[in-house]
Amino acid sequence: MDDAERLVRVLLDDPAVAGRLRDPDMGVLKPNYSGAFMVRGTWTDEPGDGAATGDPVIVKVGATPNEARWTRDIFQVDPGVVPTLYASGDAIGDEPLWWLVMERCPHVLGWQWGGVGYGMLLEAGVRFQLASRQIAPHFGPSDVRVRWFCDLVRRGLSADFPAPSGAKQLVANLEGDWAWVLSHSRVELCHGDLHASNAVTRAAPPDPRARALLIDLSPAALPWAYEPAYCEVLWWRTQTPNGEPTLAHAMAAIRERHGLEVPAPADLERLATLFLGWHALRFWPNERHRSHAPGYEAAARAYIAAAREVSG
Image (cartoon, rainbow, N blue to C red):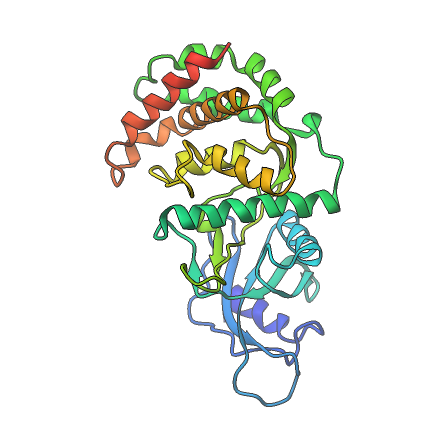
């Protein structure tokens, strides 16, 4: 018995799951990039009732404390933002190890539903921001890891191949441009890694019940416009829900519908342009590995050139 299987068997005796978590799939228990591993099973609310069926669940063993705590807290405030959380804990037996038992949804959001899918994702992102305000309402500019992000962007200049035209000047203006961003974009506690593989749904569009539910939370204090631009560069060729020029514009429309602050149109345009350029330069060292995305290099160059035009 390997260590992963041993942990699952110990978890099955935990009072929070004993008799409720059933039929764990011990077939392949491989850790992901973060060291966590997933187990599929079923869940019943009646322990020991002998029922052969239950709700499909996925058990995440080795979740980060940040992910586990925020998944629990967000689910309590707005259960429509994340999949149903059945149980969670910070230890398995005597070993300090965070774990989650969550609803297993049939669909990963992915890219297949175009603008409709990205609209679902952005809606979930805004609802996360609303829920996090109820839990920790006092995040502000001083909580943003500006230096960390600037360092990520600067690495775009040290790739094995030349950075695009305008990149050096864009980096030279980072601190001043960030000061402007923090004065024009509300800082929210955001999902932290908002993109289409980090959302699932119980029903596929055009089913009216289709709603994105967020997974793999890594909450961080960010200017809200950071996240849609991150998704747009990471998932290049994204489609906006209603023909907006960028995903940041689309999220702004959703924020406005929810009564949240949005900047003036010219400021929103500059915010979107800066974040698209910064993210494109941040990911520039990986550009040559994106052979599956013909045209991405040209798009990244255009993002960086446009950001250079509005920086400083």
